[in-house]
Image (cartoon, rainbow, N blue to C red; front, side, top):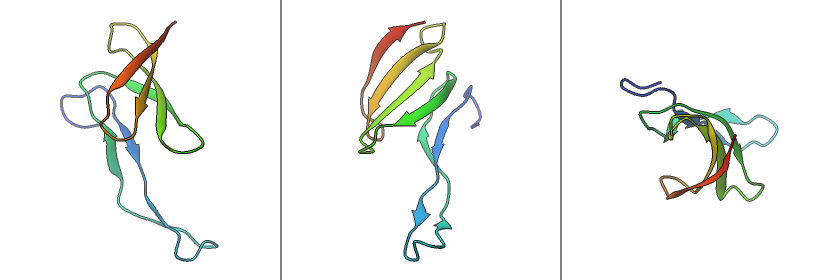
Length: 77
């Protein structure tokens, strides 16, 4: 978590030069907001990210396109 945020989503790039022994890169913030995000899942093509957030005051499902793109509210829980 970063200061002033509830919970952020991070990614960990992998160096696949040697696919049998991938090497972790430096962790990178994917989504940084003042709210809590959890349960992230990327689409098979890696373009979309679904996650739960309490952005509206209660946990709901959101989908975001790529890094920092606009997000869409999907479903109330």
